[in-house]
Length: 442
Ligand code: GUN
Ligand code: ZN
Image (cartoon, rainbow, N blue to C red; front, top):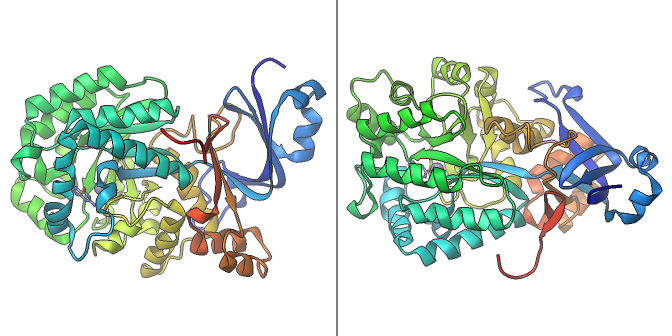
């Protein structure tokens, strides 16, 4: 009975693979009266309560930390594949599309991060909000200021979270006070990698904001670093908005497409995650799939900024890795449950309705696969890190009333994805320990 044992009883759902458009039932496991047995922060076993009980020596059962969530849904921690933590204060800024919204709201907000204390306070706030919404891993944009990454990673490290974050690289077409240079951006990134990468559960992600705000020199230097360090991630934005796409064409007339700007400079490959990917051809989708790049599907942001509707069915059919994302502060909140509801609405625009069985895959294992972290998080297979969230099916009167007339798991999960939100989150666990709700402070 060595080690620290945690036993959780609840309705356990997790995925082993993508259920695909046909809801392949071998893609998930659901234990209606189920359990997780966790040893030292890792999943030892997930299964029916009775079977887990039968395998557990009485002395272990006596000493285990027990959490009873019968009639609640126990899911792997949600994975947010694209979020800007410095934009938490501009969520819900009226009436602009992408480029004006960046100039009018986003850049001024990011300028305030020149002050380390702003970064520190915002990082603590955002990490607390992520956990309150059931999110345990995210791919996070900081600002151009190197210390904005220090602030975020300090909080994530204290909470033992698996997080990716990087300093924004931008050396043109933005306010002077937010610009780095190809050389300083590279040097700052290298110093941050040295300081934080692979420290505990943290990973560094190279973060050129998007093609318009980097010179060819900066993109090239970033591509060289990415090639030299296959253990790093890379994140940026792609094909979000028509005016943005036109701008990229005028800035890079020598390149065949927006995607080709990234491919040419060595930014396209496994562990690269591109936000949005709305306005792509099928050939571009296949190019992303073939190179192992992933798309972050950000429906609340895409509707809020009037960018368009990402075609999840076409993207996954092309073989692309896709994860779900809040894209705060273009996105309207931290909740990946609400985001799933809007992912469904985006899918309806393309006449390919997203099923609940696939939706919850997207929010968990799909995100982990998009980030190439599925060997560590995203499911309850033995050995995985025990990050999970507990959802109340009947957290609101509307949910309770609706659940009363559901008959199948798929119906219940669908109602939850449309009517659910952060009010459903009863607890969020990191490495088997209850981390939210917690005490005061970070
Ligand atoms: N494209 C470049 N920067 C941004 C950003 O901060 N948010 C969104 N949604 N798109 C971007
Ligand atoms: Zn973004």
